[in-house]
Figure 1 (tube, rainbow, N blue to C red):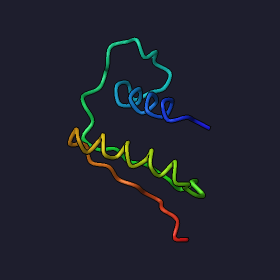
Figure 2 (cartoon, helix red, strand yellow):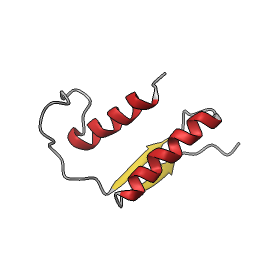
Figure 3 (cartoon, rainbow, N blue to C red):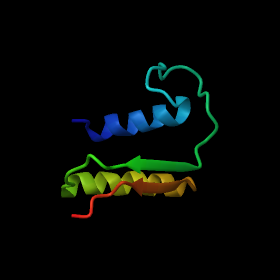
Figure 4 (tube, helix red, strand yellow):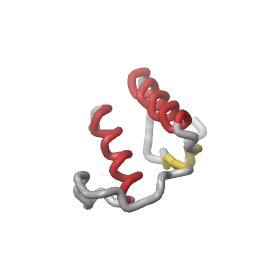
Length: 76
């Protein structure tokens, strides 16, 4: 499982490079993101700690005027 710092680092790397294989010390290759889409189909549950982390991530994106979307939510 990823810890909070690792998750945030991976999200920053995906924003900058669009690919996890690029070393993070390289210059960003992509324009700033306008939208972030989280596909949460395989997420079975969300505990209070994970929910708080997710809220912080969404708030950080919103503070940068980035739209956040969640897709493939489970009905139950």
